[in-house]
Image (tube, rainbow, N blue to C red; front, side, top):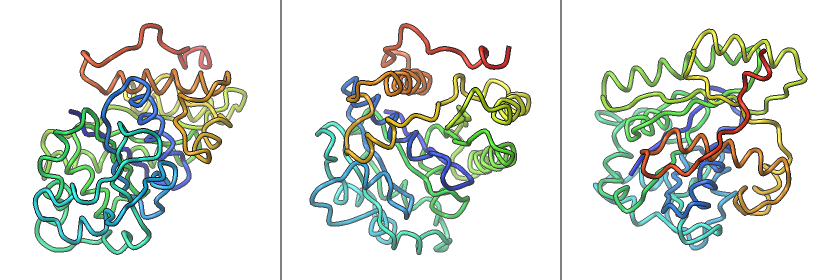
Length: 269
């Protein structure tokens, strides 16, 4: 069982796209997966369209008794293998400290729940508030999502510093494993320059290759279906990248990739 928090410091960079892409890859290989939506915008919840949800992450954090999260988990519309702990707008009120051990409320509420799954993905809000601290205090791994913009260096650095803070306090086992660059256009010189700067600043943490701007991604989200169920050149390329990314995060025995996707180095050579 692996718990992965996916975070960003800026909205609109495709953080939820990475969460859903990893969930799609897990779906494709039959891994029992839980997606925890800690973003008040609830985009992951809408894309997975769980049915019969009575409680949300807001209720779970308000209660925070050991194991109470189990009552809020429902099946997604994708498949019985992909479950969701859904979000709602009122979750925003939980993004401030609620006293001692406030950042451990999610971990307490989950208790033994993650043991039922092979993979747990946490979609964080685009900020370093209490919701993200709860996610990082629960996770084994942290994946930072950015885009190849002028502000990407600063945002990625902030996120990595946040991971270091949590690893030094509430979750010593936490480690940052990847900075994923989303919506990359290899014909855009600004994208190439910012990608190179990210690589110089963070070295092998910058995931290779970046995720291209692909129309199949929003199309699959609107259709409430996994990216891996789509059949187009763009969707297959992006699905391959998500497969490779998931393999880099999971224990070796669950890896399935044979041929890696085309390297980012072709753009920088």
